[in-house]
Length: 272
Length: 254
Image (cartoon, rainbow over all chains, first blue to last red):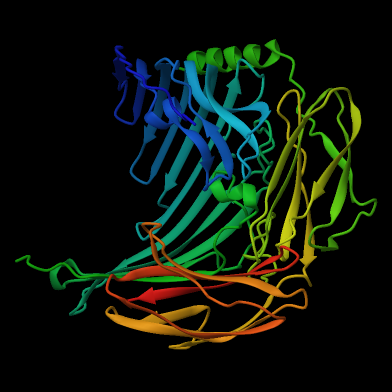
């Protein structure tokens, strides 16, 4: 059985971008970027034909795929003071011939294969925004909050594209202190509160994933001696059970790590 | 800047309203009956025939049904958790059948025959898709095949089998002794040692004088084996009714 025909393909295309930055006052900055880009289909997208044992699907390439072309517009609004920093960056991408795996409604004839998924291309939209704010009420306290969200739309199916990230947010609080001790130069203690919304805008056969949150704590120590550091990281301290919508294991209902603990010792050497 | 963002947002909104969402409702496997019985496990004897009756439905249009039977002795499951582990199957058997469907409901029956010379555990896996490619939650049931017809092996080796494996150092040999019994009378006993990576048969021996309901084989010397690697040792015994039993271990040469 021939799984892939002999092919001789060539691709050519062009990309360009231009940007604009405007600083009306020292604390304000506005940016706008416009660009056109392309991506050549990769070997798997062109020629794969068989059961992928990571995704348990029969995946099939398509040698007639063309380059994927993207038109991007993104903007940034930035406001910065001594103890305060805000950044908003919305973006909008239109893809001409976005390449993705699509169910074919035909079963694989291979005994261990389910439905055949074939690489296909259709026009699609990716739009979203990131928001970031940082505040230092006093010098030692660092607070930041970040939130981002993406909206995807497949113009052929009217559905979301596969693996669209849910809206996620992160709040960080950190207390930092400088030391003038013999060994210790700086110490910081803090935590992260991470939250994900549920993702119900999914592609065909993709599972919706419910929202989740985790709390992480950390302790960082920096030493005078050659810039050595010691970090303690306690992740998912409430041992929350949650699924990552973007993980390939999501389809198998395999959750993310429970409570876990990391010690990181960084010892630079060979440095005078 | 705000205007640009609002404009982009407006485009997104217009596009979202343009198209009606296509059918994403999954089809449903209503029931799977093996010989008329819906259960998580079914008991059979080798050589038996059974039917799998599948009742399915979809909101718009059904497209294909796939019934496949595959070995389940490795303890795999189909829903993320680990499954039950079983003794290694005797013999290989697999089936795969794709049935085209139409309409919004259907009942299909497929007939399968279990080969005479197998024993162990298999999964019957039923999958369903509609015309849009929406997949149903699959259905898996376990079948246990008993086989009282197969010859029974009582084998000892030197070095002895430890954890389904004989460990050897390159340049050494091993011996096989034992008794094979079957009430239907034995007619053949065949020994084979195959290199796993090359598939090459390193040793092959047709034991002479095989007869009776209980046959004690003379000691068989295999080796010396010079090349390191993993080898598969198979003993196949056939009885007067044509049933072939298998005894197999790995030989690990270091």
